[in-house]
Image 1 (tube, rainbow over the protein chains, first blue to last red):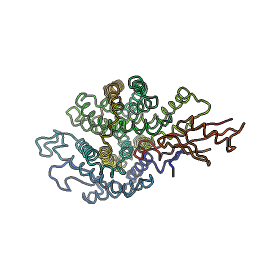
Image 2: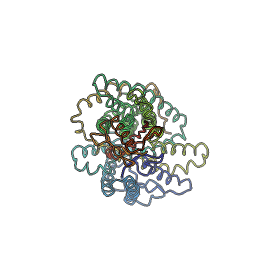
Image 3: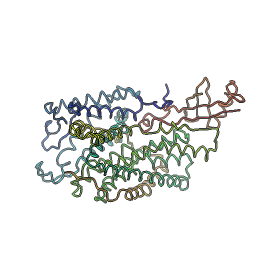
Image 4: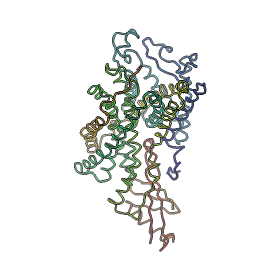
Amino acid sequence: MSTVNRRWYSGMASSEDWWAVWLGMILFLAGFMSIAGVDLVGWMAKTRTWVDFSPDNVLQPAGAAYAGWGPWASLGMTYAVFTILTCAGAAAMRLDVRRFFLGWTILFAITWLTWIIGHEAHLKATPNDFDKYGIEWGLSLGGGASYLLALVVGLAIGNFVKPLARFLEEAAKPEWYIKTAIVFLGIKIGLMSMEAAGFAFELAMAGICAAFAAYLLFWPIMYAAGRRLFSLPRQWAAVLASGISICGVSAAIATAGAIRAKPVIPVMVSMLIVVFAMVELIILPGVYAAFAPNEPIVNGAALGLTIKTDGADAAAGAILDELMRATEAGQGWQEGWILAAAVMTKIWIDVFIGVWAFVLALIWIYKVERSPGQLSIGLSEIWFRFPKFVLGYLLTWFVYLGIATFIPDLIEAAKTGAETVQSPMRKMMFMLTFVSIGVITDFSKLRGMKRLALLYGGGLLFIIVPLGYFIAWVFHRGMLPPTTG
Amino acid sequence: MDMIVGHNGKEWVATGGGVEVRGCNWEELDRTLQQRLAEQGMLSEGNPVQVCMRFDMDGLPRRLHQYSSHYFNRIVRFSV
């Protein structure tokens, strides 16, 4: 049986991208029922900052209606619901469901364990909360402690326990988890837009301008560097330029497809992208937070322009959000806007990949292969390459923005369910992304790719990161997240 | 005419409509397909054939599907 795209609805039941929409929408609708006075998502387990370990101190159900459930019932229900939903998705995607189930269970356990440990007060609490928890010192990492811990555990498995990493590969799907989290993030941005619609609009517009500028600058520079400095063949240079300049693996595949390159090219380039995205994820949030503590939105947008997979970008945005809000300057900033800056810029880049690949395909046929008249390209190619999870993200965003604008009386009721989906559920998907992205990143894969790795690493260091930061600064400078209270 | 196309590591392979053709590059694949269509009487003067070659995503490693679920659909017109 083959997997081909024939109709506009091809892949709706069988691709990770669409399943991020379905998973996101199912839980969005469940949360949305709170406008009818029914809390269908309050069973979701939620972590608490703790000093003395006990189940009651570290976990609780998210919804007030489920307060009597206790930590174990809540965590059990969380596992049951998400296991059923993800296994249904795995079956529809023709994955090995038994292997997925076992892998998912292990990832779920690692996720919650690291999440709970990362909420220990000495790791998480910010200085102004030290008295509240009765502690005298702390690393003040905010929620970033859990994310970093999850990443470290994932990387340790991916690089030092390879048989386990191979076993977990069936369930370690960072792009699926992060795309689902981004659908949930739409709810959060919808809620935030209720109070700061102007800022959200400004952020979206600045993001689209920055993404457009990055498209125009990054690709030609990297293509020229590949051709002239490293003498790469045209197809390799084009695929690598897209991977490093646009949206990573998706762009490498889209470009390779547009120019009908042999599959081995995007396969090789994707290894570079995944490994270097991990390096960026580890280094950039800390560097940006340290060197530009007063430019949180520029820092977030710069991540969106420079980190090339959705998973690593959103993960880095989440760490940056936590690190910057844990500093003295960021104490009053609302949670989520720095992350939103990272994700929004990246989403604009993702959205236009189909159009870019279409344009490139035309250039390739008319200028490179010079076979006009014989070959043609369907406009459907743009749709097939469109990232479908963006539809879920925009829908959830606009639904909550619509409620605030047209039926403000429902805001409080809508928030009850929405808060659970956009906070503990979204954060759990982020945590799963951190663990999974670590599991699938094997640094030893760079062996034997010296020349390509040199071009990719040099391109990131000397072109993409500095130029990306400059573009982010041009369009976002001076923007600060709305403050709490 | 609809065909499914993939790459076996050495050459492109297109199958469909009772035809299987191979080529080290696209030019060779198209030339072979054109000959085969003509031999089978499916292509003649004034009777052009449009072939849609859809890439089989199973030809890309499963781990890459989460990043993109589409490689390409290639439309070629053959005429005598």
